[in-house]
Image 1 (spheres, rainbow, N blue to C red):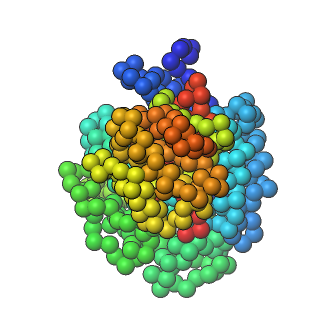
Image 2 (image 1 turned 60 degrees about the vertical axis):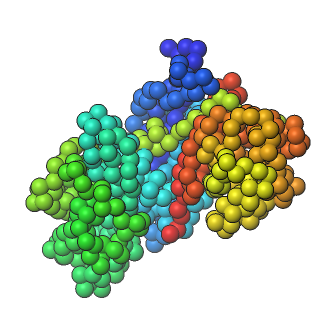
Image 3 (image 1 turned 90 degrees about the horizontal axis):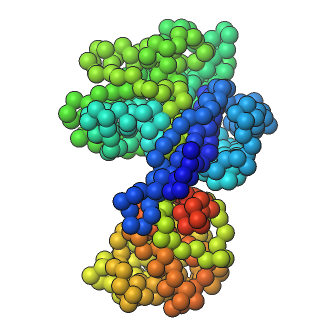
Length: 479
């Protein structure tokens, strides 16, 4: 039963992966922190209420586009099976992962599904974001926290592997590489029917010039999987990277300190089903052999392997349960501001309290915009501040005047001014902006901590028109 100080939300996670697509519905309970003086709410409970079926991701002939006409009915049928209409969904995320994010129509597909999937459903892609939510969805973060240990977790899908280094429940480092079970897929006669660019790199490394339609022997297929597993283990164990491993990396490598203190290891994703020997079916791709070689290498290297609580559904569970943050309740929103607002790049000006002046605030915003090659007034952005000013009226006024000075074209064109604070001054700044400068179309929210390079979606308030849901993510399409 939901009582005062609590609110239940229905959340959906949809994963459109290289190999498979599936969804999960969860119930999230927001609960007020009794120790917070600002009525801060947290996600206190998470419960999976529907696990969808797993489907092969439909692709058009040539494998260059997702077949949206086939995908949409699958997802709508899953909503129906779960007993939900899109109007019942409060939040969640559509995650497009691996090679699917590189398909020509990937961005259009995921943005459409986000708009139509419920009230506030975010669209996201990108290896670091996937690494993070798969680690949460697999319960690897929870395991590390409960057992006070270091754990290197790897989610291996059809096209990519996403790696998280977790120390006592805190995610310390993330990485991604193009190793997956469906970088090459085969027909009934072992002819190649699908060949992703990363799969081509592995073939070239082995001196094979195979193309679509060519036949690969079982021995060659096994050798491809073995080489991919070896490349992955170089990254997972901190070895010097071979030329192939370097070519397969899609992020920076893990820092050296990731491998100190004898970490444990765990896996999720479709290939994990083979690593833990939960499945032994050959799906006419590299998954079965890749899982076997990873398992053998773990044994050979003496890695301490634990079994993840969730495997193939880790990413979609993470999308449903762990993408949402909520603001504090001391917020301000102008009547002119329309929500949701999606895909806002985060800009972090370096405001120093001891140097506070209109000119300092204005110049630091200008410097931060230039750092990201953003032209002021061309597009909506989120300005995120780390404890920039004390709650003294004159100081807040100075800060607000500096904001206005830095954003003339934004104000003139009526573009919303989005301010995010990690302290509880959102309402104060918003009110002073209006009272002292007449600035409208302002959303000023607090108690959310962001980093430069993040993207965020902000939804309509969920509690007393004061608490705003925020999804922090990264976006990578076609890279």
